[in-house]
Length: 156
Image 1 (cartoon, rainbow, N blue to C red):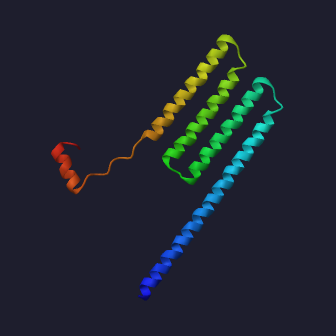
Image 2 (spheres, rainbow, N blue to C red):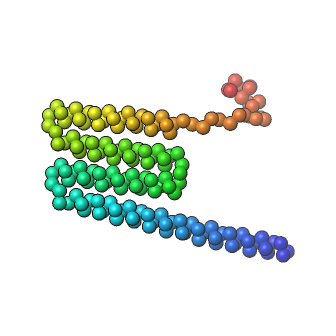
Image 3 (cartoon, one colour):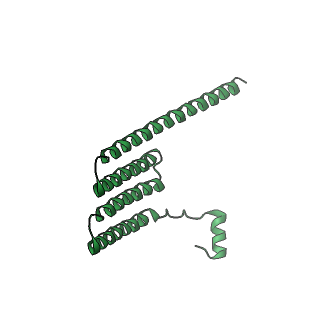
């Protein structure tokens, strides 16, 4: 009986400790998100006095920086390959958006060539990211009943 009460008390204490830890983690993440948003707001405010395409480039840089920071925060909290890929893709998208805006300074064929070069660079980098994160872990060796099923069906 005493062992059961001790086990129950330990389980309740563990549950409260886990809930407190989760709440602390959530507060830290929310604080980081607020810091990122404040930095983005400040970066965008720096763009306000600018005019024309310089302002567009500045805004693209600020938005890209914010997206990358948010993706990195997600990857920091959950370092899964999926989140790592999202960071890489966010960086690519930010670079492409800025490159597109920089092309707007040019005219005619030069502008078209600039945009095509930016798109080609983005597409090549995107393929590399997809190849890097598309590698699936090898399937564990089959054992027991699974191995027998595979031999019967011819799947190896």
